[in-house]
Image (cartoon, rainbow, N blue to C red; front, side):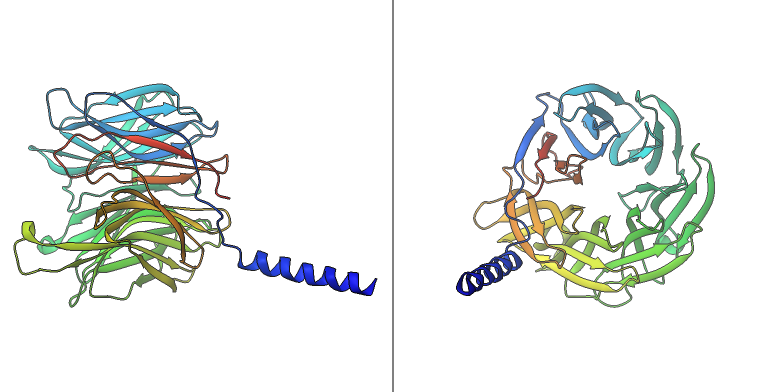
Length: 401
C-alpha cells in the first residue's frame, strides 16, 4: 500500500510540473466564419462594436460613385455575419472613419476625419440612433495637424474627444474636449509639452480614469511614445515617456488589462538612409508592444519581428490578462505578407503567431475585439494610403484555448 501511495504522489508531482510548464495558449483560435463584400466600389472597415444583443456594428468607408473620395458606411450584422442593415452617410469631401463607440444602450458615436479643398483636414463627431439616423454632429472648425482622432465615454456618460491641432509656431498640440450626451462642449484641455506632441488614442480605464497615448518629439533624439492618465476633471495623474531608442516609436492602439494596467501597441521604425528625400528612404519596422502599471511604471516593452517589416495596429486583452495583438507584415524576405495575429502572454512573451493571406498590398488588421461568446472579431484593412482598390473583410475567431 505504501508503494502505491508513493506512485500516486509521484504522478501528482509530474502532472503538476507538466501543467506549470504547459504553454499559456495551446493553439491559435480558428476562424469560425469570415465575410467580405463582392462589390465593385473600393471599401474598407476601420472599427467594430458589439451591441448588447450580440450583433456587430461595422464602421467603414465606401468609394463615392465616379470619385476617388469616400463616404462613411455603417453596417450591422448578426453573430453569424449576416447583414441586417446598411447605410452610407454622405458628408462633403473625403471621409476617413476612425472609431465607433456605444452611446447609451442603443445609440452610437463615431469620429472621422474629413478633408476637402475648402476646409482642409478636420475632425467630426457624429451621434446616431439604432436605425443609423443622425442625431447631432460636431465639427472642430479648426484644421487638424494629424490624420488621427479618437473618442471615449466615461462612466458618467461624458464624451471625451481627442485631437491634435497646430499651436504656436505650428507646433502640434494635443487637445482634449469634454462634451455632454447632446454634443455640447463643457470643457477643453490642452496637453502641454515643450516640444511637438500628437494624440493617437484615448480609452476609459477600469477604475473610471482615462488613458491617452501620444507621440512626442524630445528636443534631442528620436520621437517616442508618451502615456498619460487623467481623472474625469481633466487633472493629470501621471505622465510616462518610453525610453528613447535609435528607432522612432509610434503608438497606434491602447487597451486596458484586468489589473487596470495599460497596454500600448504600435511600431518602432528605423530609417537606413535618413539623408535622402522622403520618397527614397528605406524603413524597417517592428511591432511595438508595452505594458504600464497603474502608477505609470513601464513593466515591459517588446519589439516583435519576423523576417521583414511589421507594424502593430490593434490589441485585445483576454480575461486572464493574456493578449491577442494584431497588425500586418508589410514586407518579408520569404514573401509572407498580410494581416498578422500574435498570441502574447501577460509578460510580453510571444507564444504563437500567424499571417493571414493578403487580399492586396498593405492589407492589415485594423481592429480586434473580444466578443461576448469568448471569441474574437477582427476586421480590416482600415484606412490605407494606396491608390489601389481596397476590399473590407471580417473574421470571427473562436475562443482562445
